[in-house]
Image (cartoon, rainbow, N blue to C red):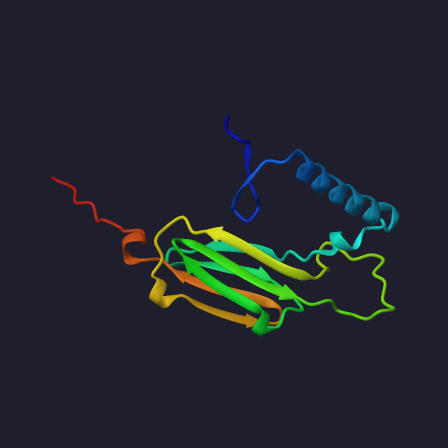
Length: 160
């Protein structure tokens, strides 16, 4: 029997889980109610996991990937391109730590802990020209397309 799968926002394929769908729905409903009624739901510490946003843009020459990871130090950030899959991993430390600190509410963009986001690049990349820069909490990765993957234009000759 084949397992049901779903494509995640970060372009990875994961086994479908009704419990994960219910948790995602609950989080979206919490966010909706907090916007309309300023209700702050109580969450357990396990729900404070950090997951950075990943945005991908394509130009004729390259793919540009932005990973929003505020509060992550450069030494805790790792970028790897292997077999056409870009993987960004790292760890965001808690903003306030201590014995007498009790977290009450942390937004979807908040949280802390180890994270990994991946994106499968749909075309060949020139791996020797890949570059990345991290500034103001945003990682910007440039993935230049291989010459064979760039669009070609052909001039059409008309016969008279």
